[in-house]
Image 1 (spheres, rainbow, N blue to C red):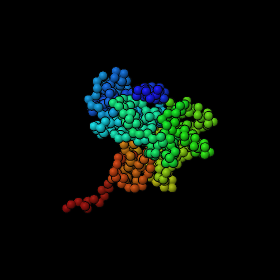
Image 2: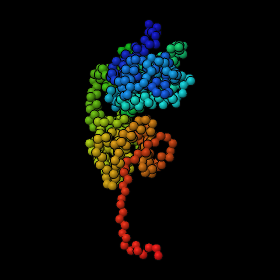
Image 3: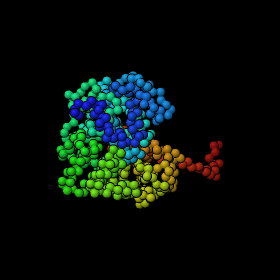
Image 4: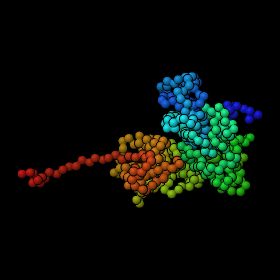
Length: 452
């Protein structure tokens, strides 16, 4: 019977696992992604989808000021995408505890550059409304993990329905790649955000794939599709009586998925069955930066030269009222949270901003003779925003003092000088105000230097 269902019926069936549970505002924002692509020039049209329906136009008026001049009921000028798919994901830093991955499948004749440029506009719109989003654009077959995620929890926003068998390809479907019974590609899709819980889960997934032990069922009766990939791993830990790894895995699963609306109830039931008190770990995350950092190090140990970050983007709850920067035995630190010391002052300040300890309302007290710029709040916001976009490296005013680079949501210090001259996207961090001193000139005995 399931094989006889139309693609639209199948998608509605799968969407019920997520859309009804997501926050109403997030549902609205996901709904208007296709018409957002058709605003202004160039229009990025999706197969079989009009530029803007009346319902979508109503939502655009609600979330865009002023009201856009969207062509209601008309087909777009040109079709660039075969399909547009949204994948809801859990998020620790979002107000809705949800993020979204947007999978755009171009047609063979479209321009990837135009699609990428337009998707950045959509990402900026979602970010302005508190939603982190990840864009995945592939002309060829999609990576295995993305295929698996689409077939479990993906929602077709517009265009053709994805299929994983070439014999199922029709005018209304698009082949996204084959999905083996067990995944063999260890490359896990990236996220715009970083947290130790997703990182730990992904690390365990990669380990099982490398051990050729990661089955990929699309659906199992009675199991929530968001939790499905992790059930097999937990069973393996239980079989091997690996209590330490089992506790880490359950902790990561609980803290990541207990607040995610589509999985809140199932995690509550699982924790009860495990006799697992996830609340004590949640308290550590919310109590203080030091406790949250200890939990992070337990799940994901720090690597060499890595800055101690708990979450990315930073959590506002970590903001200090006052941050006093001091030097002791040749290294700088923030006295209120003495968990990180460094020989360069700018690295400590940058770490404070990236970690969320120094925020817009924080009174920063630098040592004499350093004086922050008058627009330091603007510079801090600019730093966070550029790091969330495409800037990967932070360079200081003194180019001999190394740099900080971002790698998969984690931050590392590099002692190599003149990073500004290297290739890649960089952000020059200018913290200090230039002090101009007045000089008093003594004119005694200047007469003898007069020209005769």
